[in-house]
Structures are given as C-alpha cells and as structure tokens.
Image (cartoon, rainbow, N blue to C red; front, top):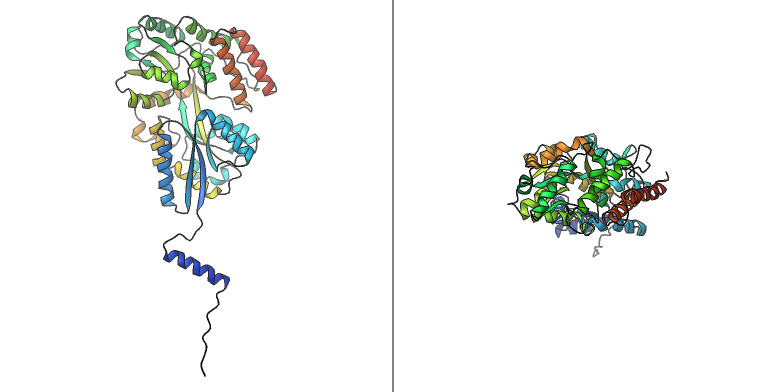
Length: 414
C-alpha cells in the first residue's frame, strides 16, 4: 500500500518563525524600525552637519532606530511648533528656548523627563543649567545650549581711543565711541530688530540696577532705572555713535559689522569668537564685561531639548537624547557652536580652556535670566516695540516704557 505524504501545516507561530528565519537569511532586520523626529534650531552652518553626524553614529549603534532631522531658523521655530501642536503633529524631540517652557507646560504638551532620568544622568549636569529646565518640581528641558554675554571690542580702535583694555562703564563706552566716530568707524554696534532686541536693552537696564519684573511678576521696566537705561542708548544713537538705522540691524547684522572691522564694540555671545576665527582670523579683539552703570550684570540663557507628550516612540527618543548628552557629542556641539559647557565632563575638556570661554564663564556670577513667566514672548515683543519707537524718535523713553508696562501687566494679569 502506497503511503501519501502530507505537507506539514504551519501554525501562526510557525508562519512567524519562518518569516523571521527568511528575513535573517536575506540579511534583513526582523525588528520594526522606529523613527524619531527631532526639530533642531539653526545656530550656525555647523548645526545641521553636527546633528546629521550624530544621527548616523547613533543609528549605526542602534539599528532599530532612525533619526529624522528638521532644521528650523530661530525666528520661525516657535511659530512652527505652535502650528505642529495645533495640528497634532509635533516632533518627538525639539530644541526650544528655555523661556518658552512655562507656556508649553501650561499647554500640557511636554513630557516630564524625571521618569526617564537616572541619578547618574542627573549628575552629568552643572546644576544651575539643569535647573533652567525645571518648572515647579519637574524637569521638562535638558540644557542643550548655554550662553552668556560680554562686550567684544576691537583692540586697535579702543587703544587709539584710550581704552586698551576695553571700556568699563557706559560713560567710557560713550567717550570711546566719540573718538572712534572721529576716525570714521562706528563706535557701538546696537541691535534693533528681530530675536533678542529686548535683551539688547536689558544689558543697559540691569546695569542701571533695574529689572524687568518684580518678585510678584509685575512689569517694572518703566522704573527710573529703565528710563535711564533707555536714555543711554538714545544718547548713543542721537550723537551718531552707533551704526545708522539701528532698527534695521539684527544680532547677526551687528556681529557682521564687528567682523568687518567697521564697529568698535558690540555686546554678544561666546559664539562670535568662533565666527571670527573662521571669517576674520586677523582681527585683534578683546572681551570685557557688560559695561557698568550702578551694578554689574550680564545675560545668561539656555536652550532646552524637550520631548513632546504625544510622542509614540518615547523610549527611542529618550535613548537619542541620552546619547546627545554624553561627553563626545557634547564637546563636539558646544565647541563647534562657540557655546558654554553644560555638563561636568565636557567642562573639563581642554578645548574649553581658551581665554574667551574662561572670560564668559567668569561673567556668570552676575548673570540674569529672562523671567520665568507665562506669556513672556508677548511681553518681550511689547518691550521690543517700545525700544524701536524710542530709537526712531517716535516716543520719549518714559512714555514708551510706561505704555509698554501697562500692556505687559494686562498680559501678566497684574
């Protein structure tokens, strides 16, 4: 009797095992790849190549995770994220200005990061910088970038003006600028448009002993100190000691004047030193503290890496965030962009032992941050508009600041 051989029947488990085996034979991954979307802010031409390199290195070590980069200019980043939030299409991770955190937390769109952080991870950071990402008792942002401000001065111009080590006070800024003007250059470069226009005035405000808001969160920048600070800047403009058309110059525009050797002084961040090294290495310059009025003060800021609450790949997103805050990636990013270290290991790297970085670290004890208040961006815009009207001569300092403070307190509900 002839026996008929029956084909074996595969159970569902057998089918899956056969498929996995087949994929392994073909050399294809059997696991489902996850994609992490990250919105990165444009700091310089180095930013996208850096993150592209980090994404490739990370994915090579983690073949089940791919990284999708979305680079956005700072001027449009907040609006893009607001649009993404409204449409329910936020990236998994994003760089944001730390000053935006409170509003984002109030909108309930950010993931608290404490549950993802181990004690060892927390210990990586220089304390004050990690605290900048805290709202209440929870950490919502990791300090991806940190900076302070100082006064860059053209050594040749300032030496001829009688201030070889740079000016120490606003009176000295004005005196030096008059002599520089007589030589045919601009004395003091002043920003008057786009991001951080209000911050550029805060340098004068804080150094005159004023503040933006008081302890209760009420706007007080229209104080006597605020009016004095605005008058200092208006005097520089009216005497022709700045570049003409201040309200047409962004931060980058003013920095470019300094790079070109057309202005004697400008207040900005450590990253200008990196740009000078690349674009005009022959320019001799120094870095001094923000000029003194009645107090010593500078501006410090951090940008934060955040995770959005609606991310569907949180473990993978956190794994990439963790990787970005290990030593080698941090040193590469911070040194390339000309920023200040935010982790202990990177701070100990020899690359940060240069005089400029040391100078900016030395300014940190007198540093002030923008207020951690809801609606800050609206208030900042009101202040910027007020300063522009003062610069253009459309309003007196006391009138423009008083009107802006009234508007701000409506937003702040004070």
